[in-house]
Structures are given as structure tokens and as C-alpha cells.
Length: 578
Image 1 (cartoon, rainbow, N blue to C red):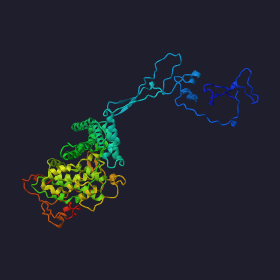
Image 2 (cartoon, rainbow, N blue to C red):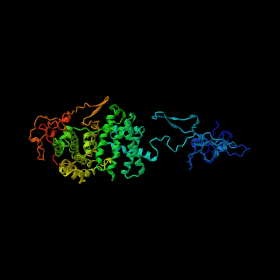
Image 3 (spheres, helix red, strand yellow):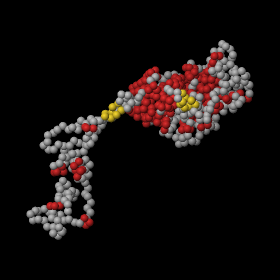
Image 4 (cartoon, rainbow, N blue to C red):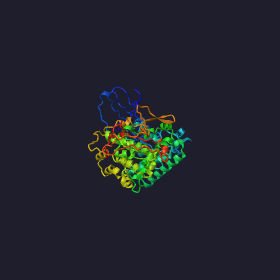
């Protein structure tokens, strides 16, 4: 029989090796110990006849030395040298530690105590990085413990900044998607591409941190006040400077910042000392998105990966015009020559047709994310000439905004940055003179009512209306949120990039533009020209052929518009007069 090492687990010292050659081998009856020694020879039983003995309870060695682990024996974990290694006169080495020098040896400096950590190095462009590490200094038994990140972005200075960035990527980005978590294309643009551009343009990073800080405060979470102020100040200054500089590498960041700055500035609505009628300035900021899009080529918008954040629901202008409240329709179509708003008749009519899409959505589909998105994006359809009229506090544009605020009150409160807008209606009421107050009856009733369903009935003037039983926000998702939300032009049709310009997408939907009435024909007062419920006879105002007219030079550009609800070929408005 070959010599075998026996590691006795039943009470004998594990460090001792017992060799079978020390015992005479033969029959069991002839096994007599030699007279010259007192060694006791244990009886050897056949393997099949051994009685099973359970192991006694013992503590396992988890941090034993490497030599004991190699020999598969239990180590007593004594430091600096365990008992087994002392008896075997071997070097005792524990994992993740420097080897202990032999006894009597001169102590030498440990060459592994100064292992260089891997360093992340940026190239000259600052866009990519690599790891540099000297492999000659590594030891496979030594694992360096890192107590801080190897890479901290330049735009993130401390733990508060890191928390703000983390909060945006995990939660805050959902405030800009009506179907967060179910629209991968939009979620990816908001959660990944925006952050990617933020690391290249610091002003966008400051904007993201400001949004997170403001939302955390809205959730009653503590955020240092000086941090919030610093984020907002740096974001606004950087955004303004980037617009003036117009560096092409900042164009994608400008595109994202144009939307997020609107949400960030909405804090003014919730500030008790905020600017009066700040809604007018907010309208201009919404139209600023269009200016940024015009600054960037369509191909650059697509390549930036941020086109999905500009998605809007389409507007069927001819159909939505039939849902315009009759009093608003008459307010616009009754503008005659000599009125201060005479040259802006077309712009007024285009805008109230966009407003009619909100009435159509509420009437046909009820509450849902698509209605919320229509409410949020309506101001982006506002014609630019009306912004100047709003700054002049013209009554007609203020009245239209009061009706829009009625829909804001119907929105899902989950969009935190749209909160606090409805008090602007009271400021509008104060600016409107008595001769226009009859047009504000519905907005005033809505602002005094808190019940959501009751407000919807007041808005559409139908007290038999009931909301859909389907929960379009959570349980029953509106399929249109995935199929209909696209890149939409200000004319309400879907568009696509075609080289250096945008063009309508061929999807079977056509829009022929506003219908132009015959300037020379005198309209007849037929039964369809009566505004339902108003007892008012509408007669299209003719253009004065006076050369001294201030609008005579623009008659060709802004022809008389005949609303579809008032022509003999179309059905009248479906929405009764408030």
C-alpha cells in the first residue's frame, strides 16, 4: 500500500502527518507492536464495516491562511503565523494581506503598499476617456479598496449635485412624458440623450439640476436654498449666452433647454411675489422653442436624438373649428375695419381653432393624457403677432387665455410644473374692462368650482356630459399616445425632415389652409349664419377699399376668413353658446 497522509479529524492534531509505513502490515491477528517501542497501533477495520460517526459541532474557518486552505485543513487563524504553519515551518500567508517574513529575517519595505490605482484620462477633445494602469505593480492577491469614485464629472461638484442628477434620471424626467415608462423612444431621449448632451454643455446640466431641486421642494424635500438659486442663475445665464454665441456644438443642448427652461421658469407662478401676469412672458417662452428649431437644421434635430421631446398631438383644424364656443367665434369674426385688432383677424382665428381642439378632445374622449398634452402644448401654436398684442394687454387675447386656463384646471396634478397657473385668471379678470365681462362668464364660474367633472360640463356647456369609465391615465392606456404623438407643424399636420427643411409627411391627411371668402360678394344672411343660442346675426365684414386704410397693404397676405361654422356648406358649431 502506498504511503498516505492522514489528516485526523477525530481529536488528533491536524498538523501532524502519520505514515502507514511505521506500522507492520499483515493479517489482523498478526499485528503485534514491536517490543522496542511503545507506540499503540490502532486496529484497522474494513471500510464497509466502519460505523458511521457524525462530526462534532465545530466552527468553520473562513479567513484561514492559504497554506491550510491548500491542504484542506482547518486553520486556527492565529496571527502572524498559524499553529499548523509553525509546526510545518512554512511561510504563513493570509489572503488580502502582505506575506509575513520568516522568523529572524530582516524586515524589508513591502513593495505592494503603494500600488497605483487606475486613472481615467480624457483625450484632448474631452469626449472620450481611457484607463491607464501599470500592470507591473499589480499583485493578484491584493485588491485595492476604493473609498471614492474614480471619475467625477466637471459639472457635478459635490454630493448635492450628484443627488440632483440622480433624481432627474430616475424620477424627474417622467414629468415631461405623458406616458412615462411606456414610450421607449421618448423615455430614452429624456433619460439618456438629454444627459449625454448635458455633459457636453454645462448650461443644460445646470438646468437639469434646477428642475430636480424645484421638484424636490414641491415634494417637501429639503434642498439648500443657495443651491436652488445657483442652479437657476447658472442655467438662465448659460442658456442666454449659448443663444448669443450660437455654437453648433451647443445646438442639441439648446433644443432641450428651450423646453426645460419653460418648466423651470414656472416657479414664478408659485412664488407669492412673482411677476404680475407672468403668463404673457411664459407664452413668449413657448414660442421660443420654434425659434430654436428654426436655428437648427432638421437633419441636426434628428441626429441629436432629441426630436421625440418635441412631439405634439395633431390638430384637425377644420373639425376643431366646429367646437369653438360661439361667443369666442363671434368675438373674432365680428372684428371690423377701424378696430385695433383688424389686421390680426387671421391670427386670432387660427389660434381659436387650435383652442377648439381642446373642446373637441374633452367632448369626444374626456380626461386623459392626450388632453393634458394638448393643454400643455397649445401655447406653442400661438401665432407670433399675438404675443405683441398680449404684451399690450389687448382684451381679445387675454380672454382667449382665460378660456385656456379653464382647461389647465382640468389637468392631472402629476405635472408639477403646471401647478399654480390658474390664479393668473384672476389677474386677467382685473385687466378686462366691463364691456368685455360678458365673455368671461364661463372662466369665472370654472375658477370658483373645484369639482373636475362639473368644470368640464361648464366648459363644454353640457350638463349631461359624463366622463369615460376608462382610466386612460393608468389602467386603460390611450392607444393614441403611442400612435398619434408625432412631430407636428403649427398647421397641425405631421412633418418630417427633408434635407435642410421640414415637409409635410404623406400620411393621407391633407389640409388646404383657411378658406378665403370672396371679397367682392356680399354674404347673405341665411339661417346657417345665425349663431346657435346667441340670437345674433353674423355678417361677414367687408374690406374697405380705402387707400388710407392701415391694413390696405396687407389685404393680400391676410384675406378675410370665413369660419366653417358660419358658411352655408358646413354644419354650425357643435358647442352651444355659454
